[in-house]
Amino acid sequence: MAIFKKENKKFDYKPRYYKGEGNPYEFKHKFDEFRTTVGKKKSLKGKFNDAMDDLKSSGYRFNKTIVIIALILTFIFLFLIDFDLSIFLSKN
Image (cartoon, rainbow, N blue to C red; front, side):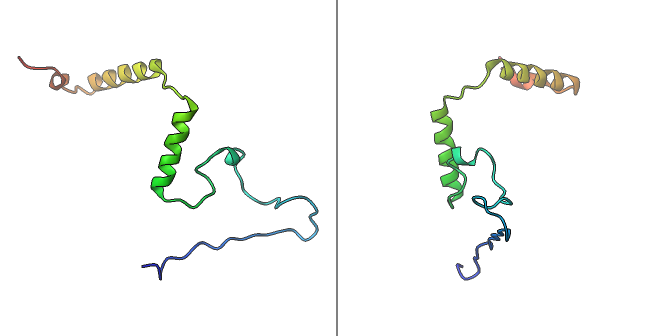
């Protein structure tokens, strides 16, 4: 159904007497030039794969302390709402 698929129109406004470089009204994030998932027209899978490659190459590690605190808070919440925690225990 490529007949009904259309691109969004771009609006490229340049002030009449502006002598600087580029467009002063362009909305651009300050980290866009460092990201690989911004700018190119890719499918969702391509963007996801690029984001995963960036994550693997950045050497990011999750913080174990935050995970432990989140688990403790989750169990406290389950205890407060009287959730039956016995479903997680094995019955011998």
